[in-house]
Amino acid sequence: MPDWQNKGDFLKTVKSVGPGVWTTVDRALSYPTRVISDLPTMRNFYAHKAERSATSARRLAAHYGITGVKSPHELLCSPPTPRSDVLINEWLADLLAILNLMP
Image (cartoon, rainbow, N blue to C red; front, side, top):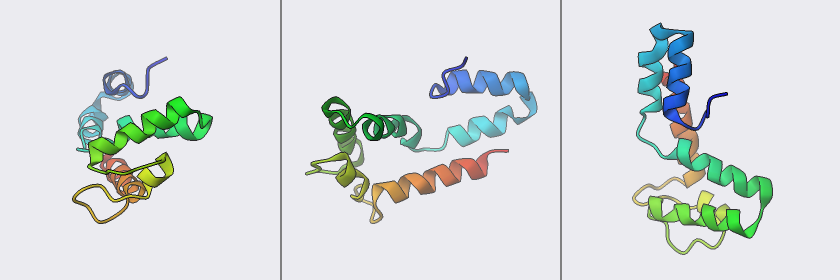
C-alpha cells in the first residue's frame, strides 16, 4: 500500500493507473503550501490529544510566523504572517485550490 502522505508514492500510483493525468496531478500537488505536510500533525493532535502531539502541533506555528500560541486550537485560529485570515481558512483555501487543479 502506498504512503499517501509521500508525494512520490502517490504520483507513482497515479502514473500506473492513468498516465494521462499524471502531469495534472503533479501540478496540483506542487501547489505552494504546507497544508499537505502539516495536516497529519494536526490530525494526530485531535485524534490523540496527548502532550507529545500538542507539542508537535504547536511547533508548526514557527513555519507560519505565528508567535505566542499556547495550544493547537489557537494556532488554527491565528493568522499567519503577513496574512489576515486565520490559518484554518488558509488551509481550506489551499486544499480547495489543489482539488480544483486535479483532473
